Length: 472
Image (cartoon, rainbow, N blue to C red; front, side, top):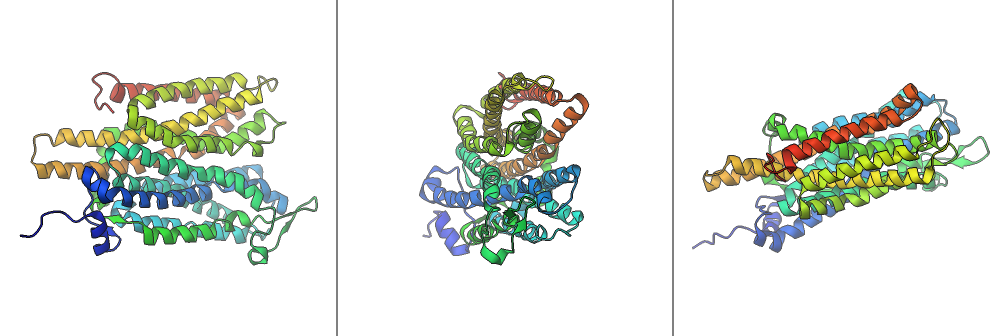
């Protein structure tokens, strides 16, 4: 009599190449025997791919401060748009990337989306070496850097399929937190590598500075090329596609009818949107409020602590519940904003930079914890929804409901990250608008407080209070 025991994930992967057809992460025996090993391998290839994506997405913030010093004559407004455009395109790309993993497969899409980062990196490396390069070309390159921003949505969606519900918070936190380090790695590394001939004469000659010094600004783009190639190959040959994660766009589009999709978009905009928006606006805020301080010495610190603490947010949510962690995290975010306000100069005078810095570091910590805890809430919410809907149904119907819950969760993870990515543009723009209208950033900060209060109410009413619609 033939054995009815299902193929192990390892055996199935070997027999079918990179595609795994038998994937049951909620089965404790299956997970311990083979599932965990495969999921871990996919996660640890996904992380460097996402780190590179974030580095390329935000690279213009380090490049624009040097363009005019090597012979370009762009206005301040033009330079601002070069920094802002990747945020706009990256957020828009995320909307489409949210649905790509179930259509193409996680392995294929990770390899393809990582390889796409070569286009803006190579083009930037050549464009900055010619001072006759028109501004329109730099606009296109900046928009293409948005490929890096888009990758987050598909990366998080992909990893969510590999892990059991109880471990998704930690896994997604590691993927996002270590991936988000790309912002800090880039802000720390690029100012160093543009000061010497990193690739010798192969990458071009130096640009002359007015004071007689030299820069190799092309290294800001070329630096990432060998790493992108290596990670692309690692993704193609080392990751897996899960046939159980397959879904058409129309199957995933059901999330637009789900109330909780929009509620979680609202909450995640407050966490990740704040993280990436503050990362973009922090140097500008230092420069305008504390003119005697060099912002480049401190710019990387905020994204660094926010990224490092994100896995902690996922872990805390796994242990204590996502809604509880998220609610109290918003309370601390509000306190941190008031702390920032307290240490700002008043009327251009006074202020305390190190108090301001400390409060902003706390704010970055809370964005990281909130990133992890809100993402932990999403799979729980949609699993609960489908469990309730399939209660009393046949075993086959319940199994299908759990598959549908996984697909919807993955789509919401991606789509909510797309909405949140617009914070990369709107938060710095809010600071600029506030300064233009009132002479300081206080108005923008008070608006953020009001927004975070609304997030406390949403979290409490739908997810945290006694008899909440979906306790999580």
